[in-house]
Amino acid sequence: MRFHAFHRNIKNFLPSLIYLTIPFMFTACDQEKSSSSEVAPPVAEKVPHEIVSHDQSRTDNYFWMRLSDGQKNAKEKDEQTQKVLDYLEAENEYRLAKLAHTEDLQKELYNEMKDRIPQDDASVPYKKNGFWYYTRYEGGSEYPVYCRKEGDLDADEEILLNVNELADGYGYFQVSGINVSEDNRLMAYGVDTVSRRQYTIYVKDLETGKLTATEIPLTTGGSTWANDNETLFYSKKDPGTLRANQIYRHTLHTDNEQDELIFEEEDETFSTYIYKTKSRKYLVIGSSATLTSHYKILEASKPNGDFKDFSERTPGIEYSIDHYKDKFYVLTNWEAENYRLMETPENMPGKDNWKEKIPHREEVLLESFDIFKEFLVLNEKSNALSQFRVMNLKSGKEHYVDFDESAYTIYPSMNLDFDTDKLRYGYSSLTTPNSTYTYNMKTREHELLKQDEVVGGYNPDYYITERVFATAEDGVQIPMSIVYKKGIEKNGDNPTLIYAYGSYGYSTNPVFNSSRLSLLDRGFVY
Image 1 (cartoon, rainbow, N blue to C red):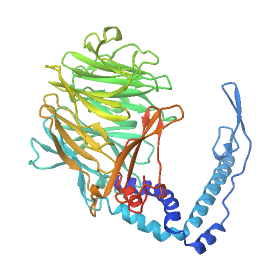
Image 2 (spheres, one colour):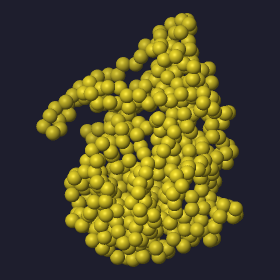
Image 3 (cartoon, helix red, strand yellow):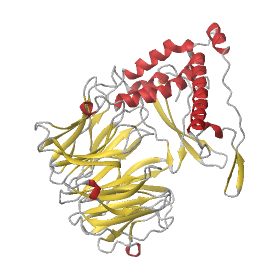
Image 4 (cartoon, rainbow, N blue to C red):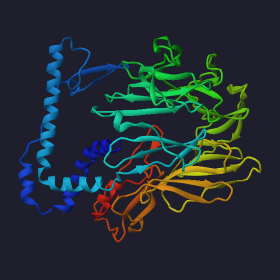
């Protein structure tokens, strides 16, 4: 889906880029401007519609732009649909007319951005249960090829799925949730062919290369194998709302109509899912809402047992869990706005037994954690910048991982083994393409495994990135990451694109985007 995603994104991005570059590049094109300005913009009809909710009334003048429950017959729906489509078509015609004189520039920018993307590419292999797994793209193909090698990377390649072949004849095709059984023999995966995020789960026998009879529709695409290599757990969606609300248990070689519903989330504000802990000892059913988390656990070797509450559901308490040896580790906001790390015996997981391991700090957000045999790695955010805090579980000593740039983004990558000194992580900045590293937690050495290629050549030394702070009216220091081409004088006269997002606990991180080079190379500050 790499090029499909690029085409969709660039269609949305190019008009904005054109509007930005036109004043900068075509200020002398008066004749072209005057011809395009003669086109009148469409004006949407205002039809007042009163909406009463929460004992308050408001008027929506554009409520007619949707199909409401009040439309009682097919003819009325067809007329309403056509009315909306006619208006959207008028908007599109207006856009095309206003940008007609930029068609050559649009083609230039489109090709420029597309040509920076490598046609042959592969992910960094990761090891799981004796196999190295990776994804690669073949030149001219739009979909991934999922592969693995047994033992070491010099072994023969085994193609698990060639999505290019599966997608032949479909206008849309998406594979999700690839999941291999503990004996490495069976692979479950989900397929969506209509872009509704409603996946049908299939199971492939990797020894014969053939599909089994398993075919489970209307799922999220995600699934988890029990340790018996016969039992598959998966989540289904409510067909009306597409909310993941049910967890089922499927036994191989049985009709999915016989699958057992083992959990149903009746609260419409929650969605549910299932996964296996890093230790592979426990199956975990998770259920989460905006401000509340809830989990149920079952030993993965006893798939026909009953899932038990990890802890009681408490409104406003969020947490996540993982397991190692005889303990569960719990990351929670319980009496800790910025989260703290707790631990509890695996046979007494309830909140009353949680003991604090990493305390809450007002100036540091604890985002996630990773457990190793000798180390605990905390992913923290302080002063709006992420950092890794590495703790030696034997000596108690700790240190922070050093990075060279002033503004960057880091995140934990595939860390599936406990018995290792190496942390795998992702790194990117406004001038550094997305990169995968390992960090030796003993020697403190970084090793670059892969950095995304920018076709045609890219030199980060040609660009400058900075991190500055703007003072808000209430005195809060707001971090800003800036990038521009070397040689630009910051005198206030440069064309500038400011982009920001901050909501629901998320913010915009400084990451690399090769399409952005088309702005920077034309003198923009981003």
